[in-house]
Length: 341
Image 1 (cartoon, helix red, strand yellow):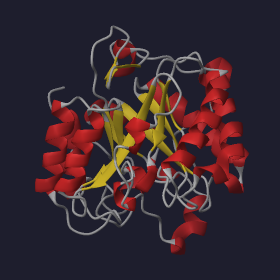
Image 2 (cartoon, helix red, strand yellow):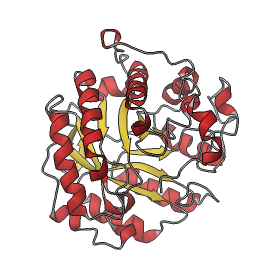
Image 3 (spheres, one colour):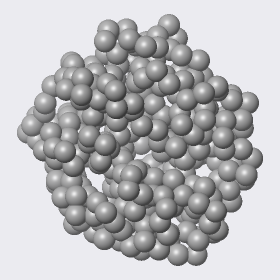
């Protein structure tokens, strides 16, 4: 599912600077540009099983997820974010902060500050900032409960007055029961709510955010045992080459029972690599759009794998707009984000 960067280039990539993105103090916080998606839609609210804007109208966000910011910070800079907001016309940036694998636990201060900066940059461009607590291995989110509370308390304190913050508290729980994921969510969410009582919160579901399907579990477990929290949505992930009609049917079922946000997907294999299956991916997208289910695609980088949208070497430059810098998957998802804008 959320695939990992090869460790071969880890040491070099981890120290690359946030080119063109400068630090912002709380006093210098960015403001939403008038007419931008986040300014128009405002504070998001769950209404029934749908996502609604400040006017109570159903809304669908479409955008991109960064790759792990410990590896690909060079792809998240002023020129690329300008292209995402203005050329791609994205509503949302998912900020993917891994916890292990060279991420948050190695330097909490560094990575928390990186997320603060990315939130301000998304805000400056009128996009929603989806803060992704990218726990993956170990699969039990309870392993990181204390870290999550510390991180989200600071993020919520700093950005509680913004209307474009989305908290994603568990990326892809795996090898763990839904009951344990629910317990984790009910431990972490009050920490956020104590600071920010009304922003949207997302929680990953078991089986790598497939409502248990990839773990062979009953997909209805979540609807029978919902997290005790308000303004909450559950996440679903898919990779179209591997996840076929059974996953699409599961998505249709669960999204009729509880609010769902697809925070990660690709047109490739679950590894994020291999051939694209645009036929199957289009079946998913057609449903997501018809049901107004929000989504962010994996991923906004120039990694060698087919699921990274940019051609190799793009992130070392300043040209990100149009189809020229894009792999086939990048062209496909850009077109879907731009559709009917």
